[in-house]
Length: 267
Picture 1 (cartoon, rainbow, N blue to C red):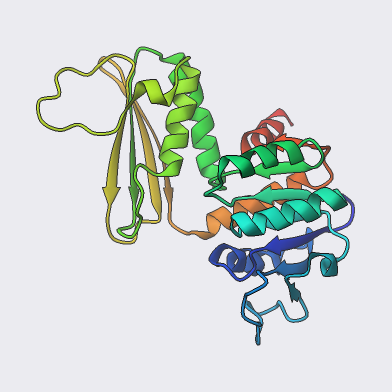
Picture 2: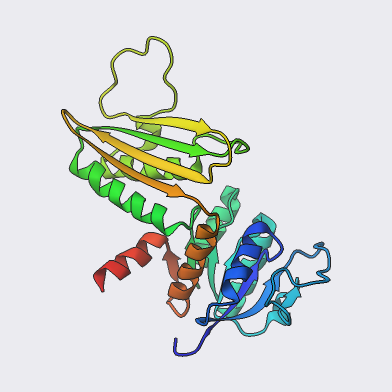
């Protein structure tokens, strides 16, 4: 687009929403139009970030006016409202909302036939590249053992991380299998020799680790280590912003970060 992309952030009062507003205020590629909040969100007496004076905070979607793209980090209910508005107005949508049931999953698939929609559980561009590299390595070295090690802060309640599982799924698909068939999530006691073709997972929890993921491909006399370390949570907001700029103006369809990377590589 020759003009700035008109954008709204859905879930503007959340942690990710605040990070997005903080980055977008200095990004000349965008015109930040509105911060969409939940209907029961407290009234904002002061701007969330310096530089957001005059920004419209509202739970009334039509009040946001004309938009090119919406970035959504809200919740299942907030995403549903965003889908309603974006579908009716033909607005592109980038969403990182997780915890969706099958009904919402099916709805996302249906709406993507009418608007440009990009969805990701992890918007780190580094992780997206890691996933791409692992997929290629796993396919090129199908006989090598593969383990995925991930580390996060002590407050994280699930294991393995969603990103670790996504990496495993990419590797399994590249080898013509599924994670359900190949995954080994725990090793303890007399486990016996490693079964051929398995993908192992190991989990570390402690301190304030933002997120670390390492894929180990192990052959005879050599190994490959692919790893990504996050040191700042703003990487996820930065990735979503890049996705929004790339998605704005595209034809209807379901997109992902890998599609964006493929286009960049082809240039």
